[in-house]
Amino acid sequence: ARKVDAAAVQAGAEVDRFVFYDALTIFEPKVEIDWMKGGGVRVRNASDEVYPHVFAIRVRNGNCESAYRKSLGKGEQVEMKLEVGAPRAMAAILTESGLYRKEAEGLVEIWKDEFFGAEGVRLLLVTPRAVYDRLLPLSVAPAPAKVERVLIAHIECADEVRRAQIAT
Image (cartoon, rainbow, N blue to C red; front, side, top):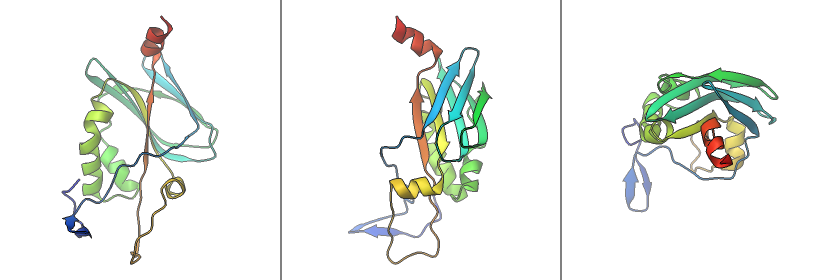
């Protein structure tokens, strides 16, 4: 996170080049998620938003499988087929979403254990910029020429194996 080409930012006596942050916020993305037997996931967008990027991740017995979907429209339902491995293009997709390359690579590096190493199933949604601005307003003085913000909603789920365990 600190290996980015950024101007130093000072807060009090502390100076750093850390250019993104994690924030816990209440957010209901309004997506319906069904992890299916056989390694797929069905995702339905019940919101009024278009999610520009969707990642489905399953880690079982230390092995990661993932699927990617570019854009999930309002009311759209899709089935995503998981493939072996973590999504290799995630940093490039985050760069396309507005982060600089080193920022995107830093974010993926920081979160790789949680996203691609922790047992379980999860959905990662890149949210529209308007959602981010509504959830976590930002004010910078003096105002920069341009501000880019990328919010990844991280949704932990229960797959068919976990649902069976809960049922018993």
